[in-house]
Image (cartoon, rainbow, N blue to C red; front, side):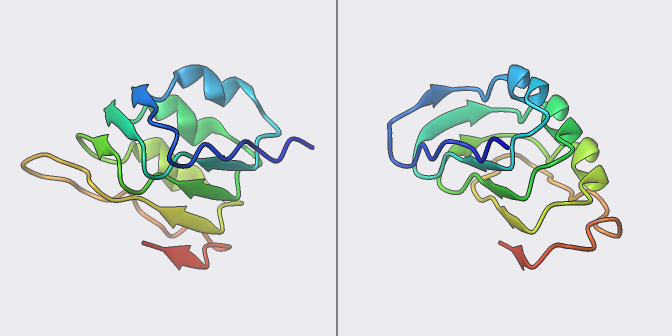
Length: 102
């Protein structure tokens, strides 16, 4: 299994690459306290083994992709700084394992 890489406070810039979705065994994405920006790629919602997504303290815009509603293994979702005039949250009813939501 591939747990994931913690890239916290690394001054990363740009958008998260949609190619992350090509890592089916990825269990964690931690890119908190960076300078990532732009829209979150909907492809990230296609990670079948993801358990933690930590995206706080970046400069994302737009909404959480609707594909995030399909996460069935997700336990921890932390995101802030979604800039824009209107942001909606995808339905969470399939996220039965979700323990932490910030």
